[in-house]
Length: 355
Image (cartoon, rainbow, N blue to C red; front, side):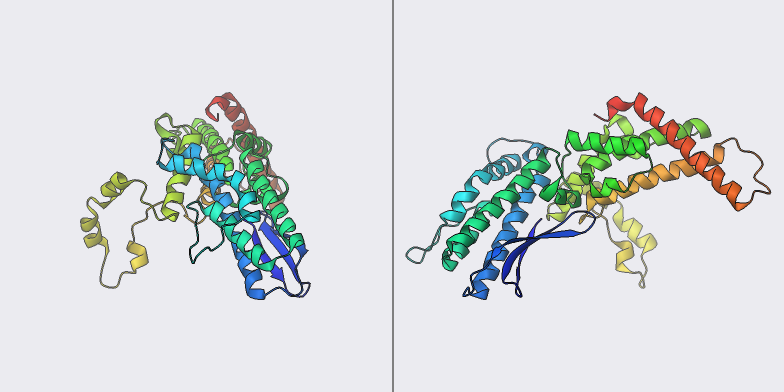
């Protein structure tokens, strides 16, 4: 999300956001010289919350929920996304206290816009209001661009967010990068939505596992794709589960019940009086709930690298005895290139599973 702050030396309102390679900042407008600092900080806080609420509609899209029927989670997400159209009016015509009462919106996005508008009303500066309104429109447009798979300009901050679904445009872009380098180029982390990158990486890991299996004679098992599960369903399901846990929800009570079966016996076998509680805790998700898509992407790329290492053991080699460092390095480069080409060919044959 975009964070807003005050440059006290220049007396300006500024915005900053991450890109995957570092943070960028932009000047929004000069601030009134006589403005109260507390009110200005309230404005920056409201704008930051507005950005957070807007990007939440991106990471938690209605399409990823189970139903869009009235009063379901999907319906609530859909209503929140539609509230983009209410932001401009809420900023320019906010709800103000009347008779000691204040109307508050149930929508986090709309209420953040009203709070922004109330701060601007208190500051009473038309130039500041116009600049803040233009900034809010820019931020919402960035979310809309990210939804379409365009992660340029302000929308590039989406590369830092885990999303419950993945844009086909971003999956295709990630697949193209992996075709160039099946081990995972750095651009996967700086240019691509991480959930989409993980979907593509799962497809390429399955190809790498198949290539390795053919060389080693072992079974090409890939847990993420077992039982006919598509890369998209497997990846988005794992990320969605972790995001729900990060939101304080218990997404799979039945699954937790299965985990708890026999837990007492396990604890009795492995837990002593001096055991570290962190070593005996029950994990609710295999992913880091603060960055699940990135965590998963890193694991998938590590899996591709591990497949190459195993494949390398089964390559037909000359006698390695007596090799100098230069010869060994040249062989490793050749092995890596050969493996990458085999994976490309296999991934192309099974490209239909990606989509």
